Amino acid sequence: MIEHNNLEEFGDPENYDREELADNGAEQHPRVGFYGDLAVQLGGAALDLACGTGIVTLPIARRGVEMTGVDLSLPMLNHARRKAEAEGLRVTWVHDDVRSFHLGRRFRFIVMTGNAFQAMLTVADQHALLDRVAEHLAPDGRFAFETRNPTGHDLRTHPDEEFWQHYVDRHGHRVNMATTQRYDEENQVLHWTVYRRWVEHGEPQLRIGRIACRFTGRDELNATLARAGFAVEAQYGGWDRLPLTASSPTIISVTRRVQFQSHDDRSKDESTTERARARLKFAGTGVTTSAAWHPTAYVIQGEIMAESHVHIRALPDTSLALGWAGAHTLTIDRSERWGGTGKGFRSGELLRLAVGACYALSLQREAAQRGIALTRVAIDVQAEWGGEPERVQWITCAVTLDAPASEADIQELVRAADLAGEVTNTLRQGTTVRLVRRSSQEPDAPRLAAAQAPVADAVLEMLATGVAAGALCALLTPAIKERLRELRGGQVLEVRVDDSTSQEDIAAWCRLAGHRLQAVVNDTPEYTRYFISKKLS
Image 1: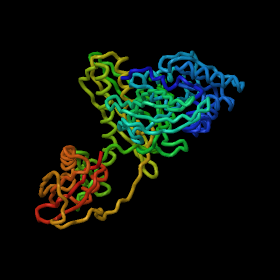
Image 2: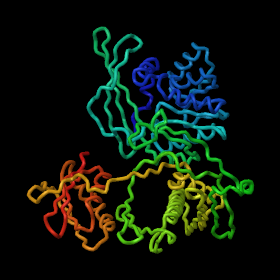
Image 3: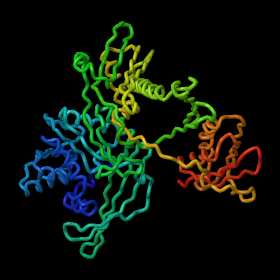
Image 4: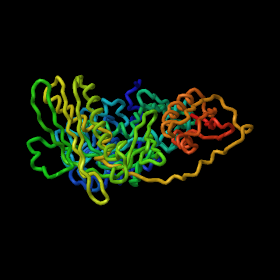
């Protein structure tokens, strides 16, 4: 994947500190206060992984916290040690790999900063790191770290040098820094080459360094954490604790270890309803056992990034609505007590369906990874509602599995599926639900006469007279996507649609996909012509 040891940028620690000071203020960076406050609040000893020159380690130590720093770069570690000794700070420095170290003790707080998590270039590297964190984290401790948000950064390849910053090195030379970047989409790794240029004794000097960083999106990150046994307690998009959004430059995570509850201890918390239960049936044994997970409150807080879109349109003069995502549709109905007719899924049923489907898919995925052939998966989901305003008080999933595997393997499979479920993790960790009013007025795309119509580079005809609006839109979405793939950025696709859909629906899809509804022409009674300009890549 890389042709170097990924340590080239860390061989000159004194100038590294000067670069950090020029780039982000080094110890004045707000991350120092953020992590320092967490360390002080938690109390006890703290561990700084990939600590470098101690830019975060030393300020926390000054606040009276017992600190240990681990780093793979010996020059960086030695420089950190000299700085600590100069201040009379007692810090334990360990030269080791964060994927394989063993200190034989636990810490209330573990931190990994400087986007060092991105130095884990594979999923296996990430899991090795998280295993070491789990080994060294106290049961009531917290692991906090940050990583660059891929949707908040330009990951395109830039082969030409771009100026980054300048600093004054330890010899008084002004050093100009420029970079090029190449993105490996398959491995999600961005390769930076850094060029440092300065003049020494009248002669131009050049030093080139290389560094590779893996970009992990929020959903993948949280799934990786869940599989490793970590729950996300909070996630932010900025050091001032701003909500995490798709455009946030960083993903700051504060996590804790998930504490599992044994079957023998279940009676101690029998009155707690926020638990998930699974009934496991083992093939050929006739043994039925139960596993209960540590109670977790289901709350709605935080935020989730919009990476997929579901559309819902009410059907006029009925209690029904049609929902669709891509080409997949379902019918939604109100509860009978609110005038529903029983012809579609109710909201509570959709929630239970999402939870159960999440478990089913997670079980299948985790079983495939372990080479376990599931011959039967049956999931029944119950929920109890209450409170004011009304919400789900608890959800129980009863899972029955048949598989040629041992009890221990099945228990581990269910545990892994429980940790990896996107829907259930969202419920546990919470997400903001915003209701945003959108104007019912038609969007601004002008209605033009035929003579004023733009010249289209391709035509897509979707005539389906009598088809419900939502159903036609469900067909339109993949069809429009497919035709736009054939066009270059800026080219125009003409979509001919009959009046069973609306300009608002077409415009909404264009906004979500990033394309532009350029014009609408209605010059025939048979169909309306929508001119969609493909977004520039």
